[in-house]
Image 1 (spheres, rainbow, N blue to C red):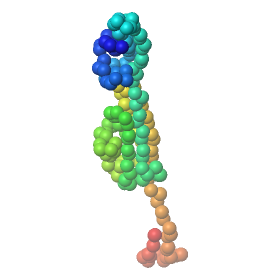
Image 2: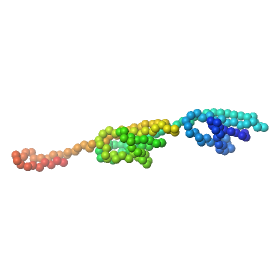
Image 3: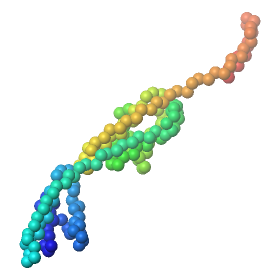
Image 4: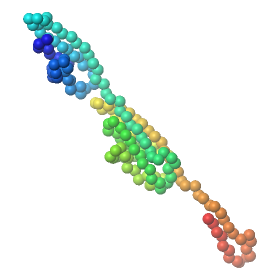
Length: 168
């Protein structure tokens, strides 16, 4: 009917087409929104109204950590830590903050990490649009095993005599 007015929280919503479709583009705050539709009385129709509510909720945030390769990491080795998120994420490794670069890559000179346990923590702080989230992943940097294959020496040496010892 003519003169239909649609409002969300008492603000008129723009009419989109002739099929009764209206577009509400201002769901910027979390909460309950009330929709009302009203039409005045005309020569052929009584006045009418209806209402309903809908909820605007926050997105759940994501923060995923990938350490590649996921095998054992050795001192002086290199590997990549990638953090993906659907919003801004803060990353720490053992409490030290690191910037998240292009494509979620955390730039750490992994070759400088001494042997030990490391915990990567990706934190999304709650904001107006997203719920907070904390994800962590542990990795280890280990030392190489010493490898002594053989020791070759003479069975006996006279006092005062030099000898050669081969170690491989």
